[in-house]
Length: 571
Image 1 (cartoon, rainbow, N blue to C red):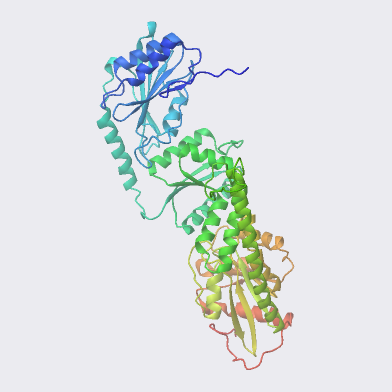
Image 2 (image 1 turned 90 degrees about the vertical axis):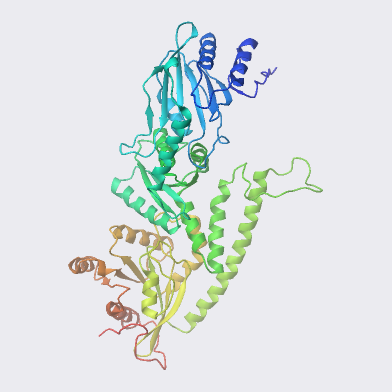
């Protein structure tokens, strides 16, 4: 037979089982008291708390607001108290919560690590512990509060202990001055008010140099998403926390940096599980993104053509489908009518069904667009015109090279994934020859599988290429890793046997001797600068040799002008 405990009064939170009715009444009396707005706690309330705490052998606490009102009376055990959800209690958007915690310590001990963690994670105005001494009298009072940005990078300050009768901290003016310091620290890091500010986080066991390189790339991805990276946090744990990925101590540091610097969101360099995203978001009360979500968001911002938009939305839905939660309202709708009454579908089932229906529609539309693309490819093949495809890591300069070769005006920008849409142009050579040259979407390490799957129809055009121009940004210190990433993706696409021409771009940023050494090391790679058309002659000569002198892939075309379009022909 089940026994249900009588529900505790609404202003009491914690374990009240085992308490006498009179003791619960005394808890209610504490909750009806009010503290002067300029006091941390009155000696009368402190005495009521310590006396009852001594009597029941449990910690007792109160959550009090800026005007002295007591929101909740907390009842714990002999070691700790549990704090309820405080999401609804906050004055500012990202500042201090406007709530302070005062609680008892049965052994008159100082604030412990759990107390200081609660202070940081919950962004409390301050935390106070009132010691319990003989006969339940209030003993020593221990105080701590959070700190704004400071050279020592301290998170909080612990005040010297005082007796309850010496506690004379002018709370109202103290909190006003503290928040002014937080605001002052924010103004020193002023950025474009229209952009959200992000803290970048990496939790990894990979070598430190690789972790730093990945974080550099994450910062560039954030800038591509029109975000402002304001700080970085690294952790190299022995084991990953199953709930938060990073350790609770490091999570406390994240919360404090976000508070001190007024960050808007957290971006993890690793992919998070749905439960981790939810848990971190609940603790930090901030928007949480992982690497895949960030890349998907960039693609959603940059997609211009209908095909690119369909591909990106399809990838987003495939990514989000397994992450739909019971409380999700993103895809909700009302259901009812005949057959719709009774328990029916749960919200989760409705959300998933709608997502699957949308995925099916997008897949059909993408198939239709792919068929049209295939027909265009068949026409190109029928004309026996050689096809070149420029492939490479994102921001290697593919679109800039296409513009330089064909005098086009494809959008270019010094950002990762500045362009997503495939561009196709004709490039005319001497002796009545021409080729079709295409610029594909850039690659990146840890490219989301859903995104690669959605863009597969576009990338399938690479299968028709007679020659792949593998463009590498030689000025990037991690260019060798980028080369390996591109080769890995080409292998996944089944293109490892397609002829390639290795081209080092941005040679103008590197010393000529270094460029020559690298070209020799990589089997006669060609060095160019897409911003300097006069440097493209050797590239065009190499293309002509590979396509016609070695490959003989296409017959000569009639009525062609014996000049290169847009560039100086090779000598």
